[in-house]
Image (cartoon, rainbow, N blue to C red):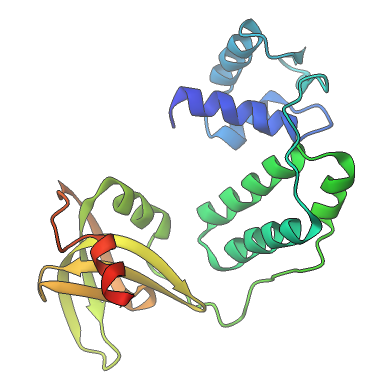
Length: 225
């Protein structure tokens, strides 16, 4: 994580808390050492962020430090809350954590009345027993999609036939309870969608691919229109 992103996350995390947050809690949330937290807090204070407290006792962001409130109606808040819960229900642990954190950021900058509405949504999503067990790391696969790294997979089709493929990973698609990997398959020289639960082994290579006309996500989406 870039340092600038981490500093932003520290402020957002403190903004969403009305009680003192310990340095150890911040370090665990940011997945960094406690000494780095102490340095980051000092730098944020130097830049004018009104954080009160000290090492060993904890930190609190002054309530005077506000951003312009976000304005949503109750239907929009229900949609946001439901969407975050669905990601928690169907996503991998890293994505689920990000969904919770994103919703906390939204709730933290809402006026009190709207924040209460956000936390008491009229719609709710919970985990389903139909969710399929996965043997691969979806978070790592998402990173490979963003960084455009070639991926090698061992795949078992619906008949149990095994094959090895090298693919350009383009997107993850959730059609609950199934996750799909949309990709360009080098073996078939065509687009393919692989069920994640049928990928028995996945290796993210060190090689990156360049975008080529006819092999991009936009090209795949155009075919589906």
